[in-house]
Structure formats: structure tokens, C-alpha cells
Image (cartoon, rainbow, N blue to C red):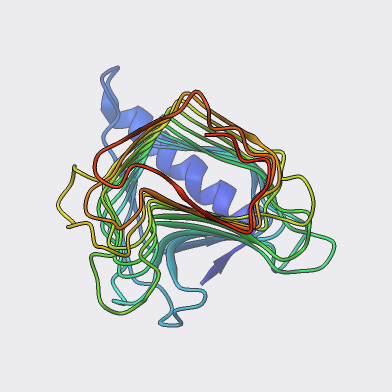
Length: 296
């Protein structure tokens, strides 16, 4: 069910008051909440919350935690997102329906348990909206059924977000969907991706599709290691896959191949500078087609 701003705030205040009454100065025990849809909620902190429930059964919108239009200035800290009980949906979904563009949503030190579909998905679908500053900081993603983390946008206004210090333990553990990538950036602008670790995925570790024009991305200090994790890497599962990416900063990364035929596949990419990144393992020379100005 959808939760209005007033209802969500009242519910949260009641839960926090109950915790404060029982914690007696010690660490607050976790609060349990069912599958939650937030619409128009703002200026709240959800801390030590376990989100546990079933989505609505529609794979395109189902999530244990949905943050929709009109939401802004929300922090989720030390939260756990349990597997989606409907068997087909996401852990977290952020999208721009039902209100203005969601913005300034921050997930800190959260753990996303294995999901049937995606661990985290942000979508910009409504013209004139998109989303901004939807940040993942020091979060852990257990192996996901399809993609682990996806930022996707059709509006030209989505992105402007940070993914930093996260551990993605793999993707493609399930069989319901064909998206098996660790981190997807598709059509988004001005993303900052720093200090993350991605383990072996059934598909690619990075699935990068640039927006029109210069991407404005900063991708630095990341480790893509396809020798680690519980999901076997495949011949087709390049650690890096980039298409239609223009510009960006790609510095001081370490990419380690597992079994892929090429450590990276770059298609129609231009003016990317990877020279301070390290490519290791078998087939460690990135493959390029239709590219120009790509420095390795």
C-alpha cells in the first residue's frame, strides 16, 4: 500500500518513541517494517530498520522498499532489505511516478539481501522529472537474482548520484531474468562511482550505457575482481562493458578478469582515459570497436 507523508512520519515517530522507551541508553534494537511504499515523504531518517515483506507481484514495479515521487531528504542508515516475498521483485526501487522528482535520498551502511530481481533500481521515466542525488554509501549487496545495482534514465534529468564504498557480491544468481550485471549506469549523467568492489557476475561487472553527449562520470578507485565470489564468471561476462560513453574520468581502478574472452568490451566509446587503471588476469587487453580517443 502507498504511505502518505503524514502517515509515514507519524508511524516512524511512534516507532522511534517506542525504541527510546525500551533501549535504556543502549543500542536500539532493529525496527521491523513490512513492504513499504513512500510517496511524498521527506526530511526523515530510517535507522536500524529491517524491511521485510512482499511486493505487489508486478515485476516492473515490485519492491520491498519503494521510494516514489515527491520524496526528498531521506536517509536510510544501517537498514536491512530482506528478500522480496513475492518471488519476482526488487529489494529497493526509486522512481519518479506520483510526484516531483525524488532527490537527496541516501542509503548508508545498508545490506540488501538476495532478491529475485534487482537489489537496487532507480528509474527516470516521466518527462521533466528524473531523479537526483540518490546515493549508495558503504552498502553491501549480497548476490542478486539479476542486476545488483541499476541507475537508468529516459528523461535526460536522471543521475547526479554517488555510489561509494559499496560491496557487490555478484549478480545473475537467478534464472527469472536475463540482466546479470553488477552495476548498471544507463542514460544517466554526472555519476560518481568511487571505492567500490564488485565480485564475479554471470553477466558483466559494469554495464555502462552513456547519455547523449558527455557523460560527466567519475569512476575512480574501484576494484572489479571476477576471481572472487560465489557466482562463476562466464566467457560472455566481461568485467567491463561500455557502449556509447563519451568522456568521463576512469582513474586508478583495478580490473581482474575471470573467464571472459576479453576483460572489457568497449563499443562506440570516445575520449575515455583509463591509463592509470590496471588490467589483470587472462585476456587482459580491452576489446574496442567503433571507438576513438580511448586511452588504456
